[in-house]
Length: 289
Image (cartoon, rainbow, N blue to C red; front, side, top):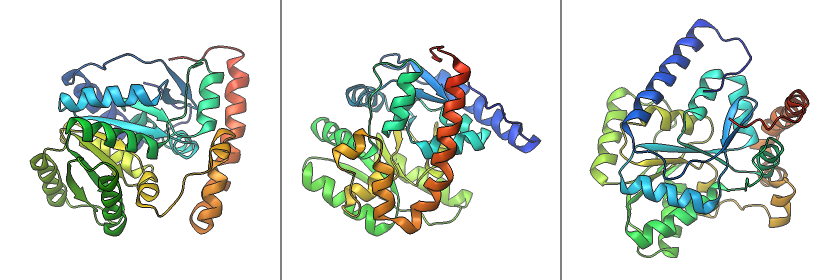
């Protein structure tokens, strides 16, 4: 486990310890990873060395075991949320796999020693896993977003992969769930037989939800956030050349300035400055964990 250098108060400490204990207990009950992967620490948050093939193979393995696992798709926004909140950092660091959704995370990973690091966009991860699940008849589910968006996601993926078994679809209310509501959702997911569950609640909500439900939901959960909007056809991924130079964030701001301009103004400059400090302090160290 990797800790932030920042101080935390008593409530944060208690929450952090509970998250760590829960993660260790669950890890001891689950099947081992199909193949080990190297990791690095970006401002205290773990990032794994992955590619699309590794993710598909690993999720297939977990799904066949009906393992309760979760995957985080890391972005600059997630790194900064993790840096500012040690309890959230523990949630991400406790994930079973942490991918790299964006060129800046890939660049920093490589600078820190993960020389084979690649970009794995959440919408593409979702698409490839749906293709695999359709071929192997693994039931999938979608949890999050609005009823309209999630229905469009299902229609589009079913149109593309006709044999895909979408066994569960639910858009939760935009408020905290009662314990009774949460129990009912977990029971519905269990009854559906879903073994791969795509979660689109946005960061950091989806990561916290997956962490809280590991061990309760017998499926591999993947926090894919914005991928729901892309797969629904309501948003577009940036052109390839913008993705390669790390400007997908700018493309998203242009498409949705009211929602995103403040987020990126708040996170991107701080991320750049803090990363420069981390790399300077590393002084050539590989930084692998």
